[in-house]
Length: 319
Ligand SMILES: [Zn+2]
Image (cartoon, rainbow, N blue to C red; front, side, top):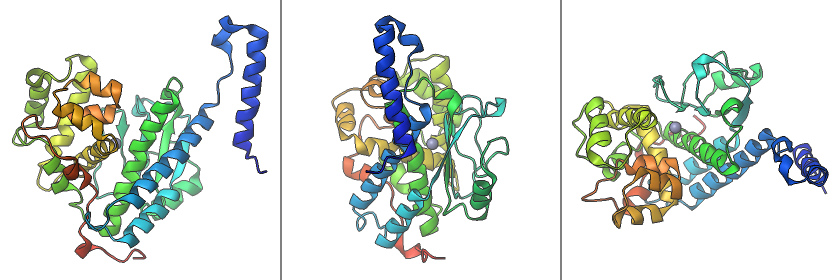
């Protein structure tokens, strides 16, 4: 039987942990060995890639107008994604837990977020130079996910998995978007799934409305930052041309909702609170629930249309 070094490390650590429990008893938990953070991230990365690939394979490609060739190429790109666990601590990256770097249609906004996406990988990230060069030459086929250790130490395995599902989701979307060469990818599908009452609002008005009129989310310093960021995404959806980052961020959150159709049923039965959806499901789902129309919530079929491309524009995947 083959045992990989990382597995071995985990086994050894489990053994040590058991020994230590025997030596120290229960009260000394504080200094106990916990499985290595890196192992936790790597394990979550593997399972996340499998989840996203399974979803892609199961997706109704005909109805979503994605060619099977695009799906296979996207799977290759997902499998080719390089995971970098960074120990960098820099003011410029303050609060960022994870980031995905991939081909894009040129958006470079990214202030004040805990999860952001750069087209260019900042020089301060301690990425091996070979990997950086590979990415710079061909970002479409060599995407990178960076996980910042500094902010991950206290997260459960489940939370790390959620972060990675979000980031690998971006890799999947950007791959399909690049393969189909369609910068309007998902725009109409996302618009159809979300509320329209705020579409003419400015970013500030959207922010104020959600925070002060809707009553779905508590108003405090943390939620203010969050709602401000989400209002940016939503207003970006209605810009002309639509803002790539906004469409993309709303798409991955709708994909999260796609995975938990019960959350939509909860909303339809009257549940509205951000805190409820964050607790029972996850924060991606809670985020998107702020943008679901109370009077005519979308059907799950409408949400399932997210990740739709126009095959007429599809280019050869080897191009
Ligand atoms: Zn994101």
